[in-house]
Image (cartoon, rainbow, N blue to C red):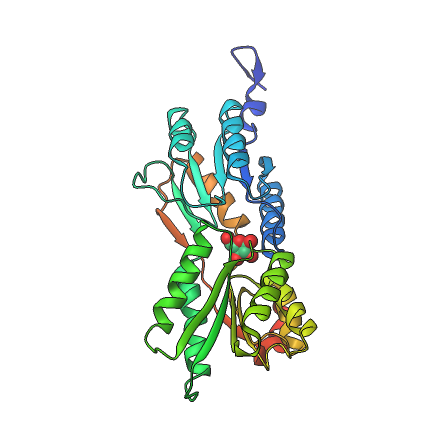
Amino acid sequence: AASLGGLLPATALAQKKIVLGFSQVGAESEWRTANTESIKASAKEAGFELKFSDAQQKQENQIKAIRSFIAQKVDVIAFSPVVESGWETVLREAKAAKIPVVLTDRSVNTKDDTLFVTFMGSDFVEEGRKAGRWLVEKMKDQKGDVNIVELQGTVGSAPAIDRKKGFEEIIKADPKFKILRSQTGDFTRAKGKEVMEAFLKAEGKKINVLYAHNDDMAIGAIQAIEEAGLKPAKDITIISIDAVKGAFEAMIAGKLNVSVECSPLLGPQLMSAVKDIKAGKPLPKRIVTEETIFPMEVAAKEFPNRKY
Ligand code: AHR
């Protein structure tokens, strides 16, 4: 092959791998594991070099990872921000280094939308609304109060803020819906169980509904409910979000009433966005994932089709 400047063969230059730096939130849930697998598999498939960093649910680790991607001069940086705020400084550093940034799964709270190219992921407010609408329909004939406890996701994270907001927006139309307690379970099974135990201790049989911001916390809470001698999905109606396989298993076992879908399979979309960026193609500022809702009645039929 002809050589360019006598240093590298032209074919080698043409084949230079695109380097993608990805900073992941952590490994807090079944959803997150599926998301990581999707990103790793699609980067491999696309032939990219992936620099992957796990932030263990800590913003400072993500900031460090992004700075290290900047120092390494990667082609594109992508990340799923653990919390919504506090990103402007590091994003400005990426912009100054002319490294495009893609937000996946969770967004950031900034007025300057030149700090990232696009945000791809779910509409978390709509997921909260779907959960609320399902509950309103299920309880439409109930005359007395409907007492709800809420397990929130990670404090300050977009899905925790938005899922709460969307759910409240729907249930507030009827004053019979009352949120008795609302606390974070950090999106993990262990915390979900622990906080549900505290809810049960404080409110006991008054609790009619559990709204969990993800399936893992609901699964942890189911254990707490059973240990308290109550029947999950019967004595306490349980609504959660993600629709991971673990939730389908719980629904098939009759222990979870419904799960709102939130797809973690963002890898292929991300790789195609990276290719477009490198090819100079414009991208929409927002790419929304299409999703549905799965009540327990359809769980057994849908289970074989689930990919995560
Ligand atoms: O950001 C998506 C959320 O993060 C998922 O719903 C939750 O399971 C995960 O930890």
